Length: 439
Ligand SMILES: *Cc1c(COP(=O)(O)O)cnc(C)c1O
Image 1: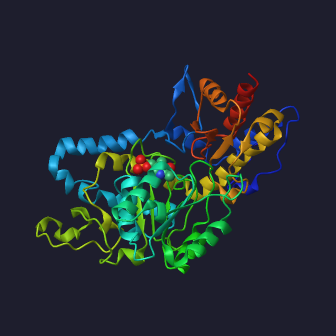
Image 2 (image 1 turned 45 degrees about the vertical axis):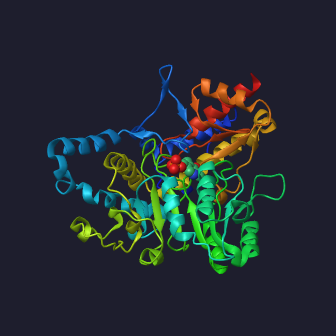
């Protein structure tokens, strides 16, 4: 029987095979997956002549097969037109950054004039902090999560130093109270209120890279505003993973990279969101460059600074076309698949991984999942904490053709990605993991 479904919720009761219930369940889910054809649009790394199980889209997304074509198109334009490519042909380079705005605004829940692809994540974080971290007398503190990704920590630390302040006093790190890795939202809100008039900026991740916890962006932004501070978010692990609503949540700024879930290639172009209400404010402190300057007057070379009254006003340099072309190739796939469909599948895919780990005696004895079990508080990734011989287990799993990543001290990050992973791969992975632990 062929079952055609439009949405996951309509999947009929599964006929479960008693001998191998999860394999049968995964097979049914794969057969009913409306996104199953998307895996054909990607190149998969091979080992010993077969495709790997790739659970590492949280670190570097796979290459879409269309990427070459998008890049070749710009190489061809360059070879045929030289400098005239800036102003002529399809997608002239001078306005090339505008081509990603519609897709990005859909992924982020933003207006088109609030998002721009440019630079890289950390450089955008510095640009944003130059505008949104303006310490004034005792309002000089920045709140971040304990165990933040090093680049974010260094950026905040150096911004505080650059303002002539002491990071020991002004950099506040908030971690969980007890021995767990989970940081309850109420503790973040309480800390923001406790810091009150001393708080200048809250910089939080959407998803914490190590634990996989997804934070409540809206309530964090609201609490920051309640005490007169700004709220910025690092969406490195969130964009392309969980649908967002940055505009309605009144986020002040956000930054992201595009080589993780957005599959835009190693070191690919980053992005910046600045809320409309700030974008219009030309008097905000900022580091300027010619690409953020009024486009009409850009080539008058009169050295009169007139920033574009939206996020584009934060641009510094002309667009990195090759990297942006790769970005567009991947965004086209997201537009077709739809972030809401992807999220729906992702909840099932990661839920199956969690269920498999809990239901296996070996796995549940050796692994503690440190990612929240509430699907609303996580994305694709599960962080598997292995207190004993974790690194050895990880290496054995990799040898058997699974690509995922290891984070010190004791965590395997596994991210089944709805665009190109299958339910059967999740089952296969847990079989391999069990073998590696038993070995
Ligand atoms: C991946 C990641 C980065 C990477 O920064 P780049 O500037 O792109 O090198 C920064 N912060 C977080 C939280 C990340 O996950």
